[in-house]
Image 1 (spheres, rainbow, N blue to C red):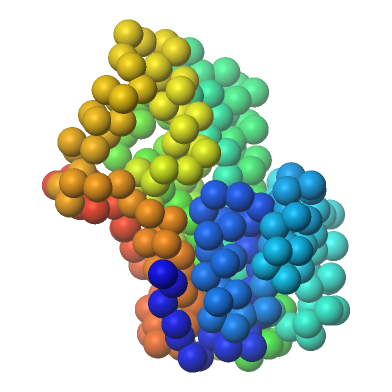
Image 2 (image 1 turned 90 degrees about the vertical axis):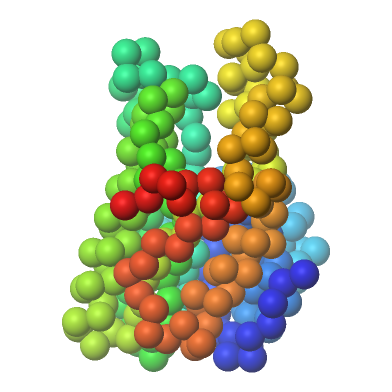
Length: 265
């Protein structure tokens, strides 16, 4: 169950990639905390359906499109007279098996357009609105892939490492210019979402490993002995978005059941 933070009530939040998976879970948790939520997604049909069930706003949105971000920012600001929380969640994983030798330039560029440029554009569009709204929080969803080598999916790992750097730069900018905007990154581990299903299916198709064996292999690497749940990440978003985290900015918050604790720097 999602946590409840009284300080979030009546705030306005924008969640990208909110039509399914992690983004939808985050949106549900924010709505349950009394937040006025707008989800955006490239998947128009599913986004409209989920928004209707959640009774929140929806905007059809390609996060790699600069003009689309201008439209989204203006729409949210016009409808709610402000914005307090941005969750840059939208992302793609690219080819499930893509080594430094086999990765295509087109795959690399697609991943970076969405995972990196989408986050940059989101931060740039949201900062002035959040500042005028009295401050708030930007939360960028990165990955443990940003913290360790990802030789089988180099573009994804590199893109998520860039998200971490963007986060720190935005945090420093907003901390020193009086914006009262905090910016932090969350680094999930292995969550059973559609994205991890696609990645595992790709590895199964290119190896002699069965799906069950592969999932067992992933699970064996997690010290706490279980996969992360969407609510584990959603609750982390709630805390970082709340006033209770008012002096937390520029951090990387790893939520992975201890998977990377032996190799973190």
